[in-house]
Image (tube, rainbow, N blue to C red; front, top):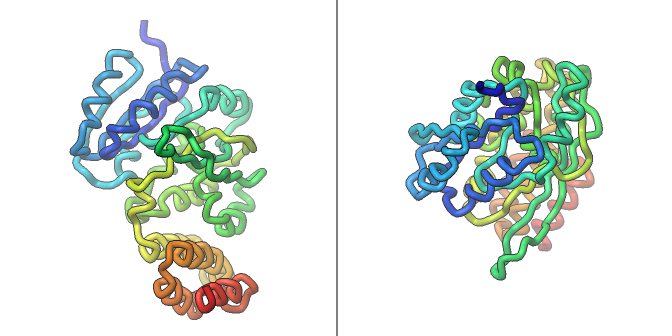
Length: 302
């Protein structure tokens, strides 16, 4: 007799043969064993498929390979395949703590129309093979669908990554939460904004997701200007129209420009940082804030 899984886990993968085995192990070794793992291979050209095939005999791993079309589309394929009442996501080079699902299920099974989030801890593997912790981002304490717009559009850049930790009702994700492939680098944030109209969010203020930093991470490949453009497009999509909406948009956009300018400066790209700062003058309130003065000082004086 086939047992209905309690959680569907969707993993999109692209050329991560070196890391995907550890990611799969962190899912299959959860203290909650009643789950299915759906791995969607986004047209990998390395040995990713070979690694995945080792796990297919477990009876809990399902594999589908598609033509390369980006992680948003790959996740959508996995979402449509999900059969369990709850759904979670993990990238193929990241890791979960072994009790992640257990802790989230303890909350989500007692409430309706709610998603559970946790903190994200970033790490890298050193040349000696040790895990070095870099930083931790914590989700807002509570977000409800009555306050989602201001709270979510005001999120700090690192807080957006907390969406990776989500455990949510599958039915709502399938109906409201398909990723929009037009947003290449801000699809998590855009998806979160859309889901907030249908879900409340509860937060566990402890790490439920380990995000691996390494040179081949998708986020590292995308240029600052591309990533920033997609985030600005998200703001434009969700801010109300009219004068009041325009004023709010300028405030929200200032929070988008500042971290990208600082990141460019940190990477020695001062000219690119200056170009982005000039663009922010007509597009946001950054230049009129203390933060704007700080980044301008960094650009000019180093």
